[in-house]
Length: 152
Image 1 (cartoon, rainbow, N blue to C red):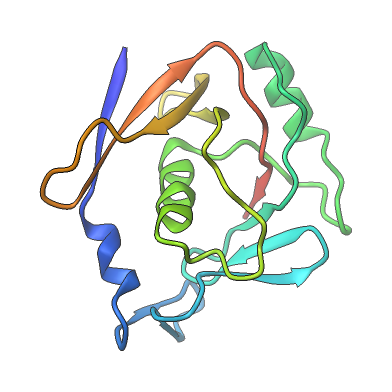
Image 2 (image 1 turned 120 degrees about the vertical axis):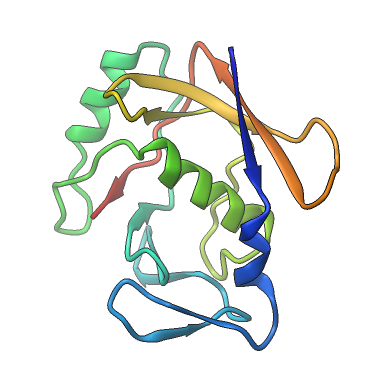
């Protein structure tokens, strides 16, 4: 089953001269990279406030194992890492596709584990089947993937 996602609005934060409100209420210049590196191995999204691990896990073939791996992460003094939601995974993908990662070495072209709205753990990757009005991506579900930890 493929989940169709349209990422038409993501162009808004790539326009030069535009600004968006960050999670802390301050304005963030959309022409600047969205991801900053506040600490070694961690990237912080200036719009959502989420912190992402720069390094991904080895490939994991089981959903329970992926969730356990994420919950057991302890990096840079933080131990509340988790799997991203589908929306968070989509947002990170759009940031990467628009080359807004700055100094962060994140390229999410592979399959990754994420959680769905009903709590399921799934793996998938974004594919661009064609070009229409804006960017069109489909989530292709896979049987295995990497874990990229995220925290509040």
